[in-house]
Image (cartoon, rainbow, N blue to C red; front, side, top):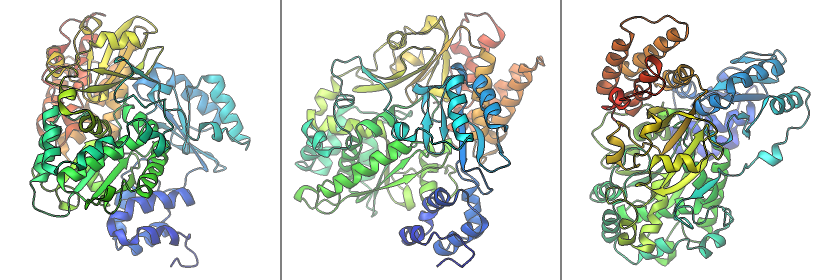
Length: 593
């Protein structure tokens, strides 16, 4: 019970107390949503209820960029300043926000009405440039639109939240006829389980339950499905490893913390086809013998979280989750968790730490998650797009899936196109598609200077390299990897040094600091780029950048540090040489994605 001088969060604590420390992050998020910030009294109350030391409560609260242990305004205005939004004018828009709000980034107005922040990435790249006011996203915004919106905020007038509470999902286009992963997107009501069932939903689960778990694992192995989150590990091999573990309980985790700049395909699936994600998770749980699942949703994805919450409730009521699913002895249920602003939590073990109520810092591997994952138990973790493929495999058969696309990377793939294009969105194709076809379908708005493949952790390619197929082998010939599936088009009018500065700033901001090579290296490369912006280059800078990159790549614990220099090194040809660089791949060809 709260003391008389404490804010009342007793109902929040009642929901999460039985979770113990694992309930810490949800408690902090919900308490802040109610009271605006995490005061010392709130933190102490939450710590007592969950039996978490106060120092650990503050350790978690201070780790996430969306949590505040100091007072903030009634409205928090976050302007996205990633590569895509910068290309669409976020820098001049920041000046508009300064003038309209009367504060600088990182400041709160004297009357306590508004806090203004530059956000590294909001994840709404198709709506660039955009800003988020509390939980509501607005974009694309020009100077006039931003002035009007923020003027209404300052005047105390109602904001147009109703029209933007659940903004339309990203535009979706299929290069494969009616589409596969996108077959239901835009054609069904994503909140309707009946509509999902009427369009092939849960046929995959029904087919899975007619087989043994081992047969389901074999079907996924035979399909050749690889992870769609970036690492491209064979999904069936991962499941097989978890299925062989004797320890109980086991978990299935959906990594929905889609934080790679330029990437928004998972958000599309969560918002427009959420039941497919749940169906894939349920099949995975049956295959490996798990009884509990978690979906960890990026903190900025409010609409996706609401849509998934509705889908979980509907699936549970209809018997697709819970006890004795579809009349079998199989039991499985799902719990939603929200992130709170930490790119590193996209790394699987950092995500586990976050769910467990700790700072989201990666673990050393081995042991691997299939042996000791969430809560130290065998865990299968796949991202949203990977899981959405699974019902297709069971419903249509692994032979069909294997016959779709190249043998080394079969099945449909979602690509995110943003930047200097007239038609940003999610494009479905197979991985033998040429990058140029994807870019041309998105309609470049100007002459292309470069395309950043794989998001901030990816590689810049020159226009004459875009005939490369998106297969792993094809991209490796130009020193790139597909990663998350993001393609950010950089137009000829862009300041390449400013683009690179935003990428290096992003990694310096997002490094969790656990390992020294990443903590120091990301800041050091950002420091050098900023110095270049001031016209102060040193003869040994390029050599120093390569040394820093090598140290991060070889000694960092997780992929953040291992890939943080890829984009910068691949851009050196633009920053030091001709407008049309040659041998771009030589600078970052040994990058480990």
